[in-house]
Amino acid sequence: MQKAWIVTVDMGYGHQRAAHPLRFLSPNGRVILANNYEGMPKKDRQIWDNSQKFYEFFSRAKNLPIIGNLLFDLLIDRMQRILTFYPRRDLSKPNFQVSLNYKTIKRGWGKDLVDYLNNQKIPLVTTFFTVAFMAEEHGFKNDIYCVVCDSDIARTWAPLIPSKSRIRYLAPCRRVVDRLKEYGVKPENIFLTGFPLPEENLGSKNLLKLKTDLAERIVNLDPEHRYRQKYFGTIRQFLRGVNLKSRHQHPFTLTFAVGGAGAQRKIGLQILKSLRKKILNNEINLNLIAGTRRDVFEYFKNYINSLGLTKNLNKNLSIIFSVDKEDYFKQFNRSLYSTDILWTKPSELVFYTALGIPIIIADPLGSQEKFNKIWLKTVGAGITQEDPTLTHEWLFDWVNSGWLADAAMSGFLDGRQFGVQNIMAVVFGGEKEPSKSFQLL
Image 1: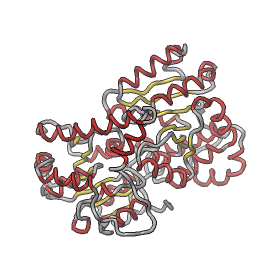
Image 2: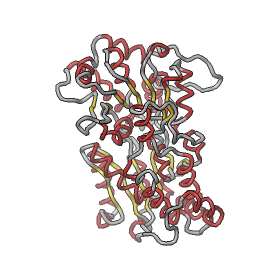
Image 3: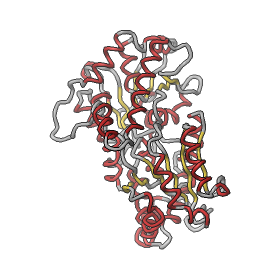
Image 4: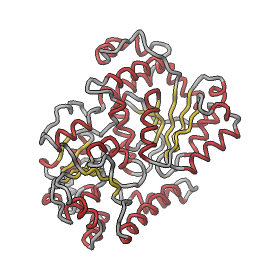
């Protein structure tokens, strides 16, 4: 049977979201949290907890006037900073964070976890680089794979001495492949697979579910037929197998997602206030993604009440929330079936544009998200947000122009949908070049 340890960390959403579609490979069908598992040594837990509290505090502090951006840039972003790609040069020298990670690992951090993983002779697939480092340093007996969660990465992702490491990387896009080489990772340890997207949003190998949702989405995103009139041949060619004339039509739907630290909650309020009349008139459906943060859920709920929109809840206005991340991911994935536009910061969710979903890009938080924004705009599937307080004006101008329909198709055509299949082909089939990696970026 094809089984592998699927290990991630409970820090924000990105690393767990990447692990969620791979959970069925785990021996018990569940993802192991390296920073929160049963029997974890107290000293290990304390190291993880301090790291998470540090990051989340300064992520939320970024909203403070004047000093917020300065604190975040100095204490968080500098550690995660991604250098310019050109000129090409040797960047294999470890940075401060890598050196600190290894120093702590050599003192025993993570050994208890690796000892447990060694109880079965199966490979390790982790979505967090530190877990891969722990596995190698503490003598994990089988293959080690690390799934990369962004379109470009800091030196922090690569091992202390990359040329001597046996860690294998599963890259979501070509830039990550080239960046890992720049960091000194051996080319034979890098595989271009794509980001692991939820299978329930794909609909089997022929992508029937995805194509059906996209065909319906284009109708909502192109009410004036401007995009379809010009690119009907493209739509018919790539959405073949879908009846383009007869399908269920869902109401025009916008989904706004708050990140794991909850730092973008204020934008949600501005969107609500701007779209209030259109929500009351049933001109739009709005999903507010609070994730697993009860404080964000209550924040949205109270503001909805103050705007007199409580009667619209669970009709054309929804708050998606769960205390359990696995359940939240399932709810979120279901909401994407009828989502026409996803509005979010450029996190790991940029890769979800491969589902044929255009993305309105909120302000990036951290160096990796700045590069994710660049990648998304290069694909042509993302558009930078305008003033959220004027959403009722510019959003509908964009829709009527057919611009967002164009972005939806660009994401579908240039994104990678087969991350899970490609990862399995590498881990279990020994493939060097997964067959479904023909996209340009």
